[in-house]
Length: 383
Image 1 (cartoon, rainbow, N blue to C red):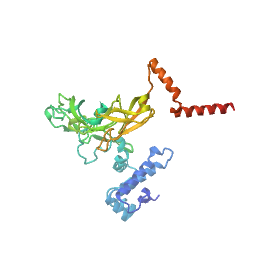
Image 2 (tube, rainbow, N blue to C red; image 1 turned 90 degrees about the horizontal axis):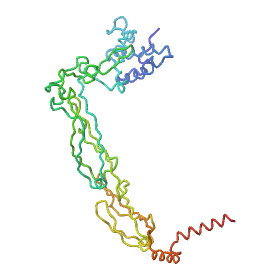
Image 3 (cartoon, rainbow, N blue to C red; image 1 turned 30 degrees about the horizontal axis):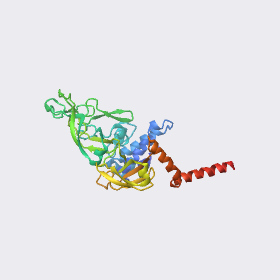
Image 4 (cartoon, helix red, strand yellow; image 1 turned 180 degrees about the vertical axis):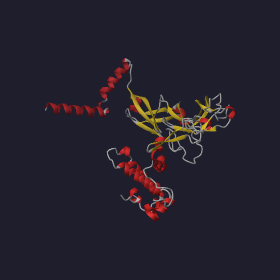
């Protein structure tokens, strides 16, 4: 049976670039792999056919020979290199390993260093989280605070190398410094973390007695943190390089400080706005007057209460709220009136209130309107 054109096998044009050919092969490899086509007896042959095509077209010299002579370029010894894909398992491994990292890199932890790759970098330290509670006053003005963070720091005894006396680690003989090893399993080339060095690419002959070869030790650190004005619960502050030390001299992680602002006895916060609920006497609400209210900066502001004010009425104090986190304009503060009903009245006070109630029907328009509506409702139900 005549062989199909290799370009047709991969579904690309004759002038396709190397990247286009590789991309097409990746798609075919996923589509035709026997493990995904258990019910299709032709899938394995098609899979090998795609592999044979890619083995030729990925190589510039073989591709040029194929473009000139077709399949005859690789039959009877012509063109050198032997016949690709004649059912041999080694040819499949050669082609498929080229796209192995692209297909499975996300699941295998990325590239561990292919042929010709250098030694991997030392392991980066983990990021750390620190929860910091502050008062609303501190959030308003900002602050400097010293915190103690339990973390891993570089070992002074071995200068972070993990080796006794600070000696340099040796290249792992198993993986040749790559940190990963590959093994052929049927159609697959499987890549795993090196069991000898645990992916580090290096081994230590005489581990440091202080850190036991880790290159770091546990220790509490004191750090000075600048808390900017305007922070709120959920604000995150990043301190680069202040996290856990890396393994064997690797770079340190970062420290993330998460802010939680405590509730306040007088003020409630909503973003940059502040709310303060102020009780006023019934007489002040009815007659009007001036009151003093606190502000978050520790000062006080005089507020005029209009006569006839009701509970829930709000008055705005501009720019008396929280500052913007990045230097923006400050928010406002809202005063909410809570008209207080007097308690523990004396006999005289009760008598005066009863007298006032008899004379004050027209002074309570909301009550008059409500009960008038109630009377109409009841009358309508009777009808």
